[in-house]
Length: 163
Ligand code: GDP
Ligand code: MG
Figure 1 (cartoon, rainbow, N blue to C red):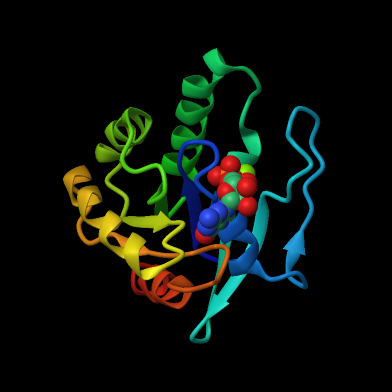
Figure 2: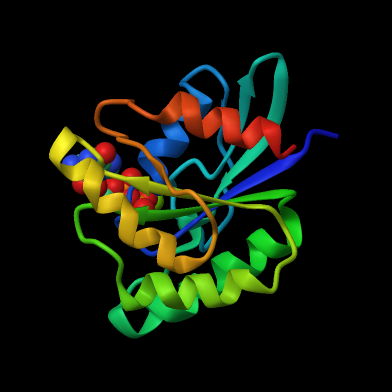
């Protein structure tokens, strides 16, 4: 079986955008389960001759503001259970938030390799915004831009190094 990579993070940081960049259109697998959004949440990624399954845990986000924390907990639990490597995604545009700290707290005890990705690094001025994410304690943040595709190769390098 392929190793499993899960993308975790609060809503709107760009998990699905990066997920789609990693799987590419051809390799998408559609899972149609009731109660789950029609977003594709399972896919297959390939990099440097290594292939892996990838889960966009945001596909299980629930509606309503009071459900956000519950959704994040579900995502994190799914990732911790299923994944061999977890991509923890944050957002350079909004900066580090309390919700990010809450997700981090859930991931600390997982014992799984955590790759910290900071999305929406769309331009050079925003590259500076990744430094505050060192405070999360997951090592070097990898700056990416789902919009432009920059940094996705570095993220894939980090993924396959941890498989
Ligand atoms: P998710 O809720 O974490 O899955 O986030 P989405 O992938 O749905 O993206 C949330 C919003 O952020 C959408 O409007 C995207 O177009 C936007 N977005 C995603 N990646 C980037 C990026 O690299 N830069 C900017 N500026 N916006 C992005
Ligand atoms: Mg999504």
